Image 1 (cartoon, rainbow, N blue to C red):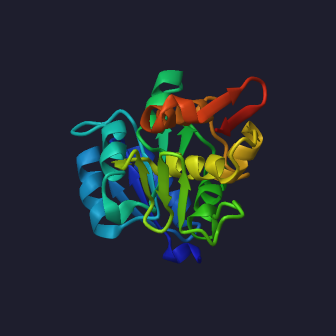
Image 2 (image 1 turned 135 degrees about the vertical axis):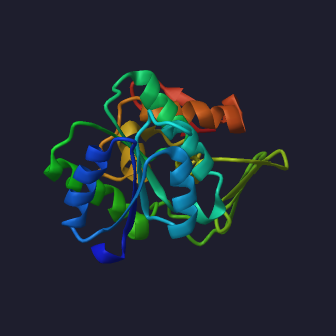
Length: 231
């Protein structure tokens, strides 16, 4: 996809940050839209259907975490990537961001070249990202009490629909594709987040924790020092 066809929504309550981001990303040919708080972001996102939203966390009206959670509930924005761009580096804010459904977490200040590189890595997955699961011809996957409808991104457990974030869905799909196989952390990062994406060390742990809460603890086993497997 050409850059001039890609829409990026920048959300920050600081005008100089928006100006900095806009200037450097417009130079790459992206279509740039801006919002000053989470409330404006939700309105604008529904209107333009962006490929990527860059969100600050600390904002008036609606903060970044809540805005992310609300975006993830909008069907037309299912394929929209979300990254937090914030000066807050504490673990708890990163965990909160990933739990809300974020795809990445970028700390500021950030150099223009690094920002552009991270954005390119994120957007690279928007169209051509696919999981190599060797079950591509299966539209419905069933294992025990879990049923996955790949076409409709729907998961049911004990005949009840469970709401998974995009990353949780892909993580479950990866693990269930080969029951009893131990997937290393590197394999999971590469398959679910992409090789060129830099995320925090606790990202997988956070997503595994949330997935266990939604589908049951008994399905995903931790193999200490190696990774995870589906049983």
